[in-house]
Image (cartoon, rainbow, N blue to C red; front, side, top):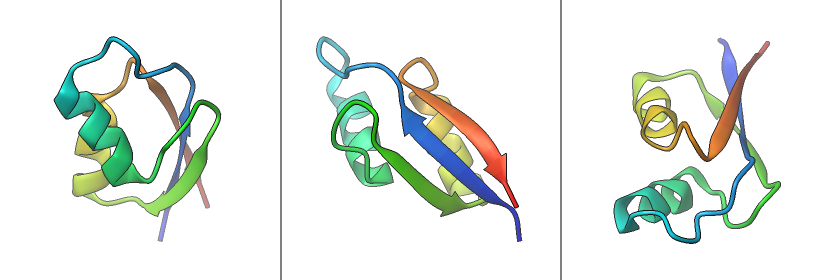
Length: 60
């Protein structure tokens, strides 16, 4: 199954509270953090919500 590598590239300072909560739900706490999640619609939706703060790559 494909996996997603999600990297926080920008700070969440000044962003909306729901964007901060989404980053925390993904497991991202600070700038430069990286998490690898399964490629599921739930994680893609969360990454789409904070697309201006993260980069997403597909990993096999």
